[in-house]
Image 1: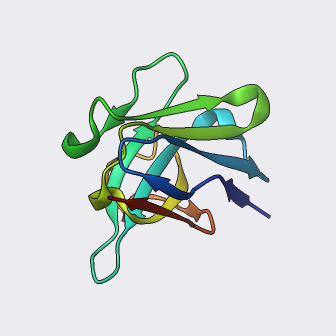
Image 2: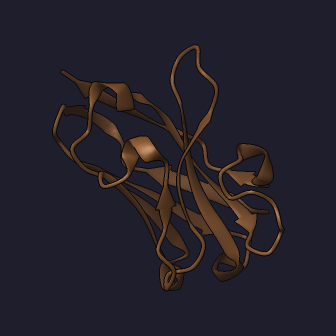
Length: 126
């Protein structure tokens, strides 16, 4: 049984930092792209960042470029999302997700992902 267990998150002031973790089990972690998505109240789930391999530069959406970085440690079956210079508009529930790396599906589309973490709340106060 595949499980993605998230940790991290919480309440932080604007300009602060947080790191989210996502530990995977039940799948061959190294061949899965790990994505990060977020969903704010009343909004659709949106792409934040993804990392396909530890030796390939991760990608993130335009509004978080230079502030958020996805990474992974295949030895620990864990993906990370480092979030710096947080803004109030970053407030949302954040999810990690996994998809087979060679699925041919978009890395930025949530419907491409097969497995999801439980979500963790990130709240940024102004």
